[in-house]
Image (cartoon, rainbow, N blue to C red; front, side, top):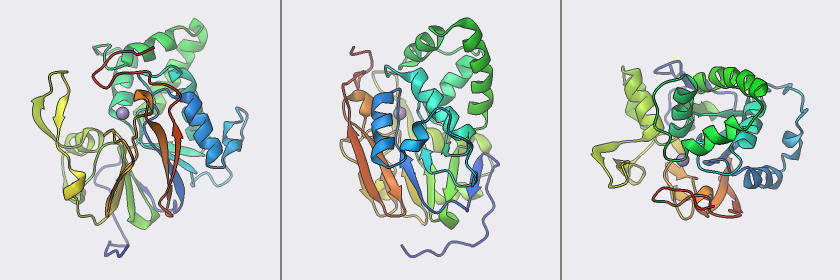
Length: 272
Ligand code: MN
């Protein structure tokens, strides 16, 4: 891909990370507690060593092998296991995750804010509350620190690619409002209206996006990875019975594990 990007790039906000040292990585779509498929996908990608609970910290700690598009939690059957794995890999420098809107809502719940336990958050809190109290309380504190610092977007390979949960566009570089940068990266553009299920009506931004960075994103569920010159969507709805997908960068090769079972209906509500 031709690039006219500036060699020096100042992030518009500290939560938009410069990761110029990351040139290759595997980007993983929305996990939503689908731990079994996540384990299979990490194995398929050839990173079996990352599944060892005693894996030592990365010696080249600045080069995570996995980057998650966020939405680790909510809806699925093994949310605690998924979060524990991603948390450990991020802590030890093997992975990085941008924050998803579900992770952010879970963080607000952890902080004691008023959040409705819907859209799968109840599953997260119930599974967390099933842990022994002492373990749970200690981990909650760690999770607050972890989730509070997750970036809104990550820029890799000298700026050739941006990873954000829902969306990105070039003008965000000039955006002065942190709230707008955060909201755009985490939710994408919305019309301001709501669907009958109570979700914000989304604007399909990717077809009209013209770069210059390649944006790799999740959030929007597609039947197969969404493929466009400058945007690749990799949420293939594992929790809804689709698949868990990874994109190998810079080769742009897709790896996918079919969902073992739908845990959630697209219109909301538990399946199992
Ligand atoms: Mn999601």
